[in-house]
Length: 224
Ligand SMILES: *Cc1c(COP(=O)(O)O)cnc(C)c1O
Image (cartoon, rainbow, N blue to C red; front, top):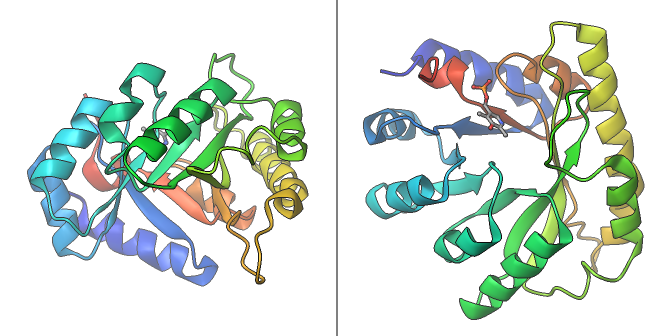
């Protein structure tokens, strides 16, 4: 059973911002996804390669599957044919592997660069400076089987609202600074997704310019 009322209120909250809701269904059963799907939800986020692949194979074909966890290079092959957006590109080596697997299955795979904005130490994500430098360089542009659509970030695990706001604001500033380097042709800017905000902080993230929130427990309940 999912929290239908919460899904409704999330939609109401997102509407004025035109933001996309990614329902984070990691560890949750197919029935829960089908229940959200029946209510019109079409974007789902998963953290594990095998779980995404299994759910994609079993569930409706009009679902957009987002990969949001740390992606090991030797597993890219499994999701390359079916993933809608890899939100967690955290190294150039991973970007190269996604490009290679995109080439293998004849796709241009949409990706976000994951940027480390939280104060907690983690191995994953580019620093702000690294992301900025990447945007200026050639390496990513040469990978024509991936398309860098924007940035993803996770804020600190804290109740301090002004600290959260500061982290989201820093990511938005970086995003705006990087966008010109990724500008496409014909007025289309493919670099248009700023994925930030989860169950506890999505309202602040929206106020700070998020275009995509990733919400799990509010919709599906706590994970064990
Ligand atoms: C699990 C997860 C979420 C969702 O977290 P909730 O607090 O349950 O909303 C969002 N983003 C990422 C990267 C996650 O791993």
